[in-house]
Length: 432
Image (cartoon, rainbow, N blue to C red; front, side, top):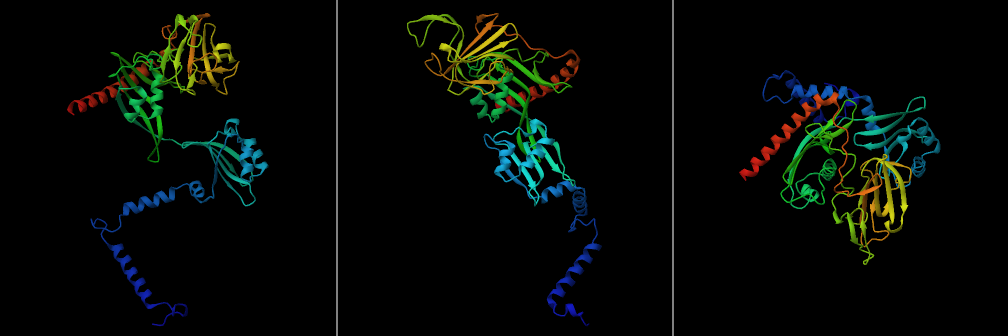
């Protein structure tokens, strides 16, 4: 046989390889599909084809783009960051013109990603909020930039955990493998009923079910506590998280009473009381002076965060004699709380501003007349000083009547689940 001119110099061994491959393909095409030794699984092949054909064009395009990225530094604005990366000022204006204010309020450590054209125009910009959400800016064919908030759905997997108190909630919780964030939420849930500086005893125990958050099969964080039980000094306190149809979430007792009172019992987590409320006490700095101690002192390292005990308005934030750096919060017309000897204030704690319960208002220090770093905390009712550890705290709103039936169903289900896990844990412990 005479070969065409352009194939005359093609090696004969290559012809043999091509011929063998052709024969192999013919054999495969007639091989019985039901044969258990079949080399090609047609179902896998079909699945692969479907996945490829259904892959969104936008996803394919994103993979091919040349993305750049940067982390926000302290003091950065959008214009400062763009200038550092040679992105023109006109691009800042384009973004500002279409973005809501909260989208361009940058925080240190936040990541920005972008793609630019050959003429240095932004084609894509992403301001990352979390693995699940980012602000997205895309320029269309007409050169106009559009904005969208892109959010992804994560998978929530309930996780059970329990621990027995030997040292503290924090130490023993971490030892049991419970994430730090979950322990802080636990302290917040029980903050009105348990003083974690005074009330814990060896042998106390707690258990909980909380969410672990997964994205694409990998854990990316932890969610909220769903149900929890704390056994403290012979009493059992339970709480269940409930979200109403308006998206408002809170924790309630099994009877539907709010776990959240109007005030925190303790404005600092994981500390100790160094001095109690007293009508007569020798002053630790002015040794010979006997005077009333109209508050409670919490000894803690300098820099420990101090939380507002309740919602209210800051009526004083500044220096006040022997109190040193002081914050006073007015809660409605009846209540006031005072926080003294602060090392510094939170930057948002200013006279005239409102604070929310649990919001950090300052940090422990020893300014004013103080022998060591601590928080001096006062609680006033109608202008009269009351013992913060003994005063009866008003309760917040209980479960609304319209949600009660739905809450009771969820409450029964969650607590049954928690009880079942607790029993399994006890059985395992007994067996060992």
